[in-house]
Image 1 (cartoon, rainbow, N blue to C red):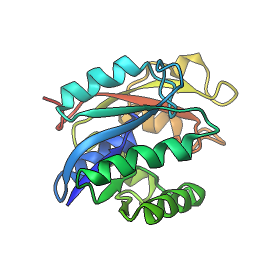
Image 2: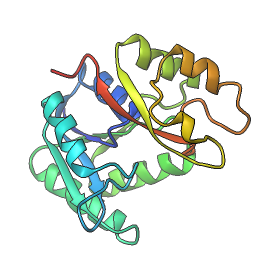
Image 3: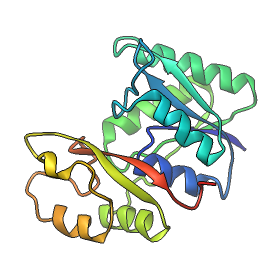
Length: 191
């Protein structure tokens, strides 16, 4: 089955891609970017950095310009174009935010494709451990300043990071509520 990966460049989308590659034909990474084309909507990363990352993974990236107001409309247009090319599924890195899952499943259902969430319902410790144990490398590229100070920026996602962050009140281990965002720099899917 041909599938696209909903791509942020971070650890969950990368791990989801890695898991999907065993069972699906991953045709592209779909990344929504700002209307000026400079930054990703998900993590605010430089769009050129994401293109470089996709090149290192050797999977084409499709970057679609959008505002927050027309995000769903532009996402649907992009997926509809992929469906015309034989894509039958979308892979998403959500862990347990029900609102995200409902949106993903509704949009995919409306477009007649399957929504696949390989990390859904997994314990946070299992997700981050699988990411690290699989040999991926990532760094923290953004934080919610009121929860994590500047000293967290640039931190590698490793067991020391996990040990340090798990003791902080109000901070999700995987940053699922936007406490922090990551950028993956290496791992088993990188060439």
